[in-house]
Length: 117
Image: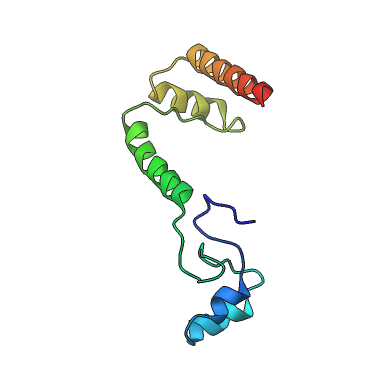
């Protein structure tokens, strides 16, 4: 079974065997039991698009704009020193109480979605 969204296909000696010989291809053939091949048609070896990977790449690109616009909150790791943690939260324009409320609301939403599956 091929899993889409990773931008790569499964490992496939057959794919690498049909490629023209080169040093790079020889290495990939040797490692074909662990090296993934691009998504391809199993009969023709024609490359297949991975729309999920393209959508993920686009989402990540747009996240940089959302983060810069303050639409995405940075959650500092819980093991950071208290002063550092408080500084990161305050730099986003949140009080500690607002940050806790935001996290609790997010946790409740995740729990709700998980219970629906």
